[in-house]
Image (cartoon, rainbow over all chains, first blue to last red):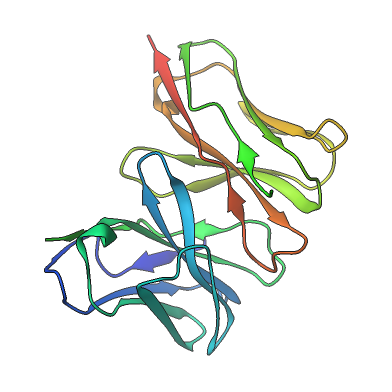
Length: 112
Length: 111
């Protein structure tokens, strides 16, 4: 079974803090993704990566950055957390030309 | 634009059959997939249609008709545990490896 592991289920941070969300997958997938999910807005893509050290902006990249130094790990960074970044963050991975994504359990981030 | 439309909510009775539609305007995509998400949980893959027609996986079936610009997920013999949100998704041919998700349909199964 594909396993996508997110480092935290719940996080509480203060405005202005730098926040790191970590995601690890164990299936040697080329592609990894970060989404945020908010009520009524569905899944919105923040960033994705199709190879080590490669990244592309998704639909809502503002206020976020990412890092992919190893194939299995994809990190989402909030440089200076703001209250409007309170959300559920979901990491996913897929194989090269895959049309199916496998999701982690999610991290519910609250920024106070 | 490249968007997928789904009903926001559907209610059905335990044991019944329910169909969740997903419509779109342009058909330049590789295939249509469906995901299930329970409250507080992560989306999990249910079904994929690369070609037109019906795909069956147990109680769940999915259908795609590119010429009619829609697909659907069919859930049979509904159980209480099927109460969840269901998302359709496509990978458009001009969007590299991204999946575009519909806004989701919340299914409530009543006893």
